[in-house]
Length: 340
Ligand code: ADP
Ligand code: MG
Image 1: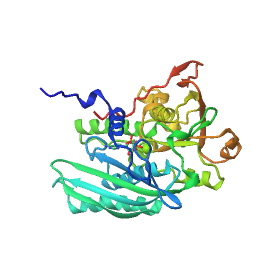
Image 2: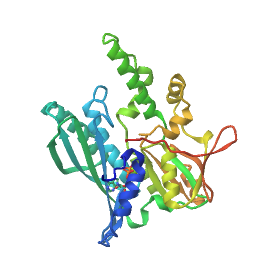
Image 3: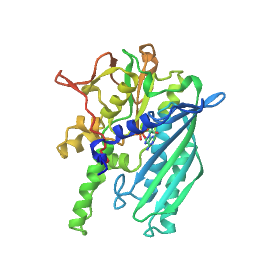
């Protein structure tokens, strides 16, 4: 009998690693950075071209019972732009691929595209193509963002050096909590459709889940002060997972200080209401679409003038650890999203 190894024994990251190891040495000098960063980096004459794809699959990444199609379109675009910003670049074009069952009307697709175009207007990106197909079941979306960055401004996952300062934009954990609220209200609705949910007190968290933004402002602010992050990654699977990716790619360790994790006040209260530790949400929640990056110590004075950038720790020669409020050092562990 042929050998069969369940995908679930690997997990997403090991699977990608396996594919990466099987990919041949790149045939074209232009293929500067391939599998393993937020976007592929292609060498052009005077700059780097950046290319990145992401899926959004019904039943895996979204639930249409609480995700309006316009928001879904917006999210499809912004999560792809986020990977371009994570290379310190600017997105310029977007390709959109849709597969849908006959459950969807043309009006539904108009609404989805209204969201895509809204995000493209905001981030100054052109939709230049894609592909459309029917699907046996559900709605499958994927998009590919194309962008670019000046050669001396590229930030890879692999550039972090010991003593670099670890920074994050915005705040963490709220999108995950927004999802918990939406899931809970869905269950309440299913058991009693007459009940009108009051979700106004969770508006920040729900907004973070349904309508994520990409961090163009932070990239522009860094660019304005002439600071290039030594390494960068966007936070899609949760801070812990992304710190581990940076450490692995850069062959360094990191110390993250729990007390410096940026958590929004509403997220903090919502976490406590759900009996989850706010720190766990910040570390493992996912879908924040903030940026995690490192800067040289010399750049600290300048970077601290930028609003909404938080200093959460340092790159080290050791292992990736969390320094807790109680003063203990514990190994950072990735939960992230387990798709399989
Ligand atoms: P992100 O979370 O930033 O979107 P992923 O974890 O999806 O990044 O991907 C990490 C790297 O692996 C990227 O370079 C991506 O292009 C690559 N990758 C992901 N899936 C595949 C695949 N099926 N085949 C080849 N490369 C892949
Ligand atoms: Mg990414």
